[in-house]
Amino acid sequence: MIELYSWYTSNGRKVSIALEELGLPYEIHPIDITRGEQTTIEFMRVSPNGKIPAIVDQDAGGRTLMESGAILLYLADKIGRLISKDEDQRWRTIEWLMWQMGGIGPFLGQHLHFTHYKPDVSDYGKERYANEARRLYGVLDQRLVDHEYLADDYSIADIATWPWIARHNWQRIDLNEYPHVRRWYVAIAERPAVQRGWRVPENDQEIPMPVMGDEL
Ligand SMILES: N[C@@H](CCC(=O)N[C@@H](CS)C(=O)NCC(=O)O)C(=O)O
Image (cartoon, rainbow, N blue to C red):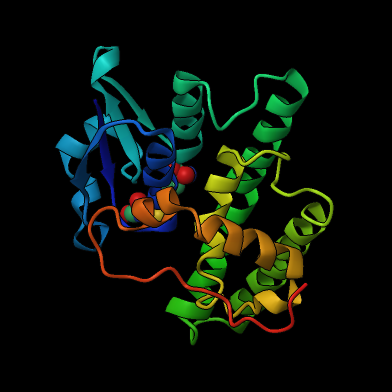
């Protein structure tokens, strides 16, 4: 049994989606980050950085893990799915997973901060992170021109990236400008495991769907 400490955010949803995809039994411990529950001593024993998501694997002697990228790799390796056994493909998956962890997550996070949450504090911040957000969407679109998924087969790299793209509305990004991202985004949104993972911990948010313009 995996114990999952999480909240319904882009980083949190990566892990609930992966657990649903892998069919691993888990118990959810909601950590309401809007009420500061991530800073309790009890939670920080599991996640010393004081951020969700984190897990405890009771089948592995109570092993704790923080950082969504590490958790996704751990879960994929534990079950032997969502990451290829082929060496080239395994490294391709890790490459795009790290691109998400170092690019999409931090920079779309800052972009959301300046554009969605605090639109009046800094024009410089707004412009800087909007430019980087558009650049990253362009990189993703380019990768998906001739790859169905980031590392060819659906993998933890897609699972890490998709919940951030699910906030395209808040990021004021029109997915019709990135047709390959839109195709990939919709395909993943339709997966039942993704829909289940989206609802963890229990919440009534709908998965945002792009306004469908011309089909590819
Ligand atoms: N690099 C971390 C980032 C985790 C993170 O930023 N989590 C956010 C929610 S999406 C959080 O816990 N925020 C609470 C806080 O910053 O106090 C990961 O990928 O796990």
